[in-house]
Image 1 (cartoon, helix red, strand yellow):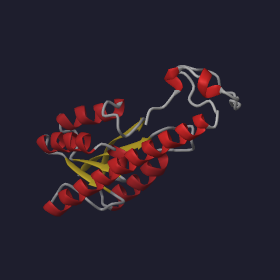
Image 2 (cartoon, one colour):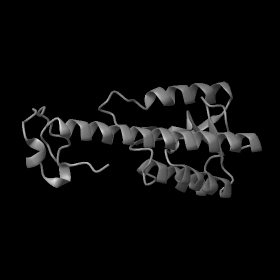
Image 3 (cartoon, rainbow, N blue to C red):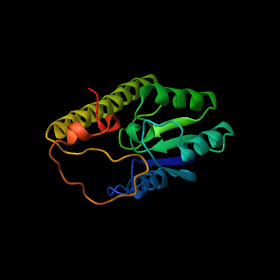
Image 4 (tube, rainbow, N blue to C red):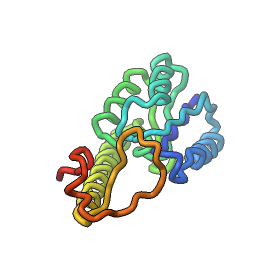
Amino acid sequence: MRVALYARVSTIDQGQNPETQLFRLREVAKARGWEIFDEYIDFASGKDPNRPQLKRLMADAKQHRFDMVFITRIDRMMRSTKNLFNVLDDLDHYHVGFECSEQEISTKGAMGKFIMNLLSGLAEFERDLTIERSKEGTVRALSEGKLCHRPKGSKDTKKRKSRKGVLKNTPSFYRVQM
């Protein structure tokens, strides 16, 4: 069996390293006697379906260059149920399987597909909760007069200091709506 290994981390600057996922995937693939076709690694949000390596993986799947996509956990592939189902549907159409090493689920049977649905929903729920908590923390910080969020493209890496009255003087694009 030829497998494609897929790993994703949101950001490299917070100590995340895709090698942690790849090490485990290589180990399991070797133990099962699988041939590793290629490794696809993205550094992006799991909500974004337009990741460069994911696109390359899907193009190779369409050409049936491998038999299965192998990942550690569902949330490494997608954090959106809709996007995950689109990927799984395409893989099914290409006759390419999908399996997780740590969650021991695959698209091979009815139970695997059911568990995949559950875990995908939980991954999306977890992401949505994280976003809600972040917004709540930002609103609290702004109410305490702290400046939150740098403008897009800011190269300033210095730590910001709190200022009195910053909420009144803060441009509207800094403010978070709940």
